[in-house]
Length: 137
Image 1 (tube, one colour):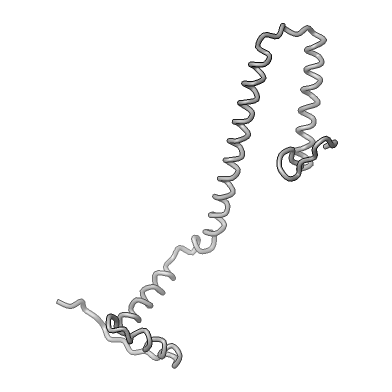
Image 2 (image 1 turned 30 degrees about the vertical axis):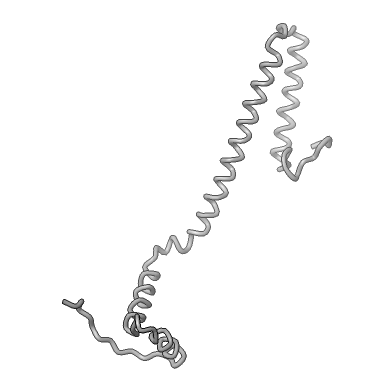
């Protein structure tokens, strides 16, 4: 039993009709099949989720950017972990520092924290193309 089909009559512009004639010259297809596929494709495309069409590209870009940020954070954490391991290994057998040495260490740490805060506030980067080696920053 053949699938039930309904006859439709419609008008096409001359140029579009010519294109349809050229496509239907192939013996393996018919004008009806071409038009049916075109209508189906049009309906499916119109049925796409409007939000996907509007925000899909943006979401893809945000997902890609988030992947880069995640990669960068993982590299920084790994670098920090390796630095801490190296530092602990290097200073494993040093004597307990006296109060003067502790005060110097605390002062240096405070300066370090201030420098990090300035870098973050100014938007400068210590790594990458914005590197300011040896400068105040």
